[in-house]
Length: 331
Image: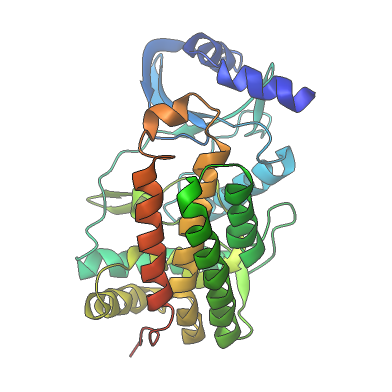
């Protein structure tokens, strides 16, 4: 019941609620208010009197426990203390970074700008590789206690089941989707089997170009909300796309920087297309789970249409072929 009430309150979160929450910490808002590109949580840039703007993140209820959020905060604050360019939440004078105002949990972050990284620029990729390696070097020093592992069950099997159980897939495509994803999960497992025993570490978890803000001084790495334990390649593969020759060159650029600060085990290359396939299935299920949030049909009007599911089946069939191809080679 409490979680249901919290979800209802989150759906009714207004700018006035947000400003009241921030001012409850002793700050004075100046009326500037800008929604940022986030749907899982509510994230806004807020003007503050007599100081730089802040970014306020209001957490969606029911996703992470307080302990899991604070564990992510601790991780990013440790990384920031090591002068790794992550954006960590601010602490108040009581050393608290996760705040509560009525039913709302929120955190405040420094506001940083930037542009997308140039993924065909070897210098950008090498620099990115260095910083991701430094994140992983710290991530390997201990395990998360309250945050989950990235595994086949939670990123493929369970999301697939949710989609099939909740009538999102058009009736005439269900059989094709069901059969295809059943085979894909077997292939994913085979990729993990070929990789063998992989060392899992604390990760960013959702390290894609949209979470990199590039400046003249290099990158800011943002949004550790999906931080979890998993193989290092999870934080690298999303910078690899295109044909095999292009991906091989980009991989070399990334690892040129990465291996200056942390070892990379090439057996993890067996997981690249498996992880890409898992992300595709998981992403569809994420949209489905959030479809009752009014913000989602507005932001993703193409989801839950016949065209979407027809395209997904084509993309997933391509992934079936890619998982059968030889893995990328790192020279």
